[in-house]
Length: 184
Image (cartoon, one colour):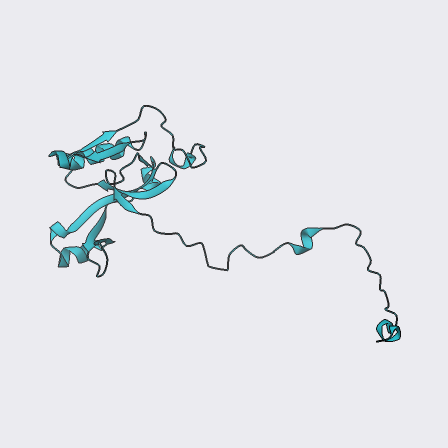
């Protein structure tokens, strides 16, 4: 090709005016951070007794806000699952169709293990004259103020829970090493 074919007509240069000052305000989002009526899904918290936690535990000291009233539960076998599942049940329905031995009653309390591992702790409410429930309840009360580790002594032939409280820190520590105000 010749140089004439490559060059063609001269390009017209259009100057672009430079803005006086830059502001990101016109790029700011004006809508809510979530879609209307949609919130972040909270995942289920695990639940267990204080001795089944197998670690040091703190229970939230505010029973009014972070502990449930006594609730009714039933253990339900789930086909294909490795173990049965605990379900809430309406007390009147449970009383009508189940034997009283199948109905479990206890409170749930927000609890944490070290490093902000939260769970719901079973707090006994019935048969508190039973040595197992007495020691479990005492461990739960102790865990409201200090880190407590409760261990079952059933393997040793005793129907009680032994609780251990460390003599060092009584404050919750988060993963970054700072005190956790939510459990203090």
